[in-house]
Length: 337
Image (cartoon, rainbow, N blue to C red; front, side):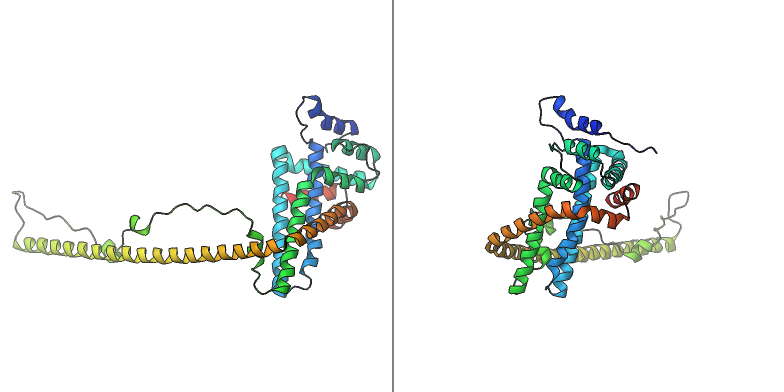
């Protein structure tokens, strides 16, 4: 398939099109969105490496929890990147992203000033930066402010938890700590156990019984004989006994189901109360560390912004094994797994 290549003026045209088409706030152009996705992904890949320092000095169990949380956070970021690309480009999202990364990394490798200027115009950065590291920094400041703020707050939160765990024995697990600010889920109201109709108990012996045959009569409408009448009475008594047994079994099953539901409700209520207690305790501890957490967040924010400009080129090459088509294909495979 022929690669889609963009001239500098074409990219500038895409950037200016929303402005020229009306007086509304300009929408992020396609090339700017692709640049944002690229920088966001490479930043996401770098954060776990930076976050490993958070596990230093922690207990093995806490270090494992931090590593697991970092991996889960990164996976969530990749999903967000993919969804944003798919909302814009639909079925062409993977192709567009792969082609952009291929061209961007190749242009950076050959120090293509015209391509750099075109992308700078796409993110409304004038005059353009002197190099591609400067372009990435500009892209972060223009396009990834929310992502940087969210990532730095999350890392600062993990760091606060680690420090508290080293000082106190009453700090809850990392999963509880990170979930303390999550909105509470609204559970559907369940009717009380007594109001729910119990399931019909099944008697396997009764189900296996063959249906009772009808009483056979002769052509005059009379029974075939005294033995047949006796057999008919015996079948009726057997049917009544079976029906009574089934009713008894159904009552036992209903009572057992009600008891099980009551026990499960008590266990659920106890678990919810415990979770709420842990959440309130985590909130109290976090509130006491609020000032320190803000300082940590600012520190992480500065560090993440520097990562984008200083290390993404090397990170791209180390991860993909090259630039151009190889880089584009590798990153597209990661984002569109």
